[in-house]
Amino acid sequence: MTDAPILIRSVEILSDDWAILKKFTFDYRRRDGSLERQVRQTYDRGHGAVILPYDPERGTVLLVRQFRLPAYVSGHSEPLIEACAGLLDKDDPETCIRREAEEELGCRLRETEPVFHVFMSPGSVTERLMFFIARYSPQDRIGEGGGDRHEGEDIEVLEMALDEALALVDQGLIVDGKTIMLLQHLKLKGLART
Image 1 (spheres, rainbow, N blue to C red):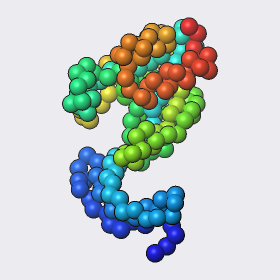
Image 2 (image 1 turned 120 degrees about the horizontal axis):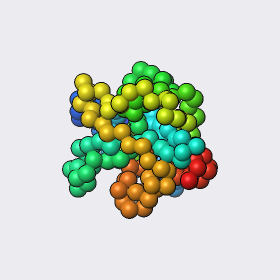
Image 3 (image 1 turned 45 degrees about the vertical axis):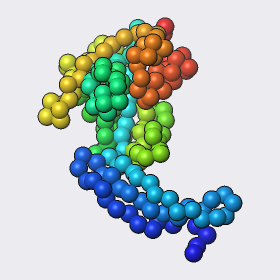
Image 4 (image 1 turned 90 degrees about the horizontal axis):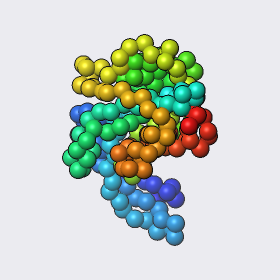
């Protein structure tokens, strides 16, 4: 036996459909030096990127509203209000988020600013999200947005004041973690006029 903190004993693919669900059996070396056999599952759907466009002059942000099945089956019957996001597929994070902003928001972004690179649910999900913000103005709108119908997207674009969005967080109407993080980041940094 090695002194490595983790020794993978077996990996079993439980599902390979929309994403890959794997079952890992491994030996974990505890802080006291003892070994413990553990079994965990990981859900791998790839990495992603998320962006919150903001207009510093008008104090507004662009968000989307869309149906999310996992939220629905967990008791949240309303569509979620979220920041624009997408899976990287084979793109780098900035290319991905520019494409998603055009598809979902109908907005062509000029400059993006990376903010965070975080795991959102590391207890079981392997996805890591790259967070961005970007300035926008009404002139950057190039279309209606709404998402890619061929991907099953039916997205409503919302433009609202940053303070209005933060009030929706307080009221429990914005419940998406990535969105809350980006809204609070804008407020803490004083990037949008309120």
